[in-house]
Image (tube, rainbow, N blue to C red; front, side, top):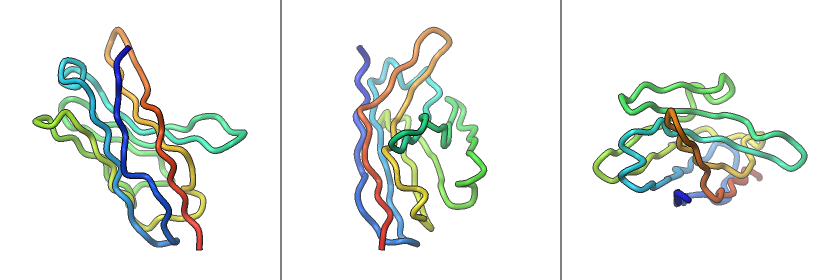
Length: 115
């Protein structure tokens, strides 16, 4: 079982910022596309952003221009900087890794945007 360790969630006011982190074992990180997903109660988990080994990024339309995903290969960690947060961004955010042969999830971190 591959363990992904997430951190950085919290509560902010609308318009605020947060940065999420996700650390993975080096043997997995170096060959994995990494991503962030989010889920709210009663809804399916939604893809938010991904970054490939080569650094190519993709985002769901609702976060383009506000969220930035990045990876630090020396630290085996990905980040997601979230600016201009909106109440509809409130969710549990999950880190995910995937290769050609396997995938796995982190435990999730809560992000709450409320005034």
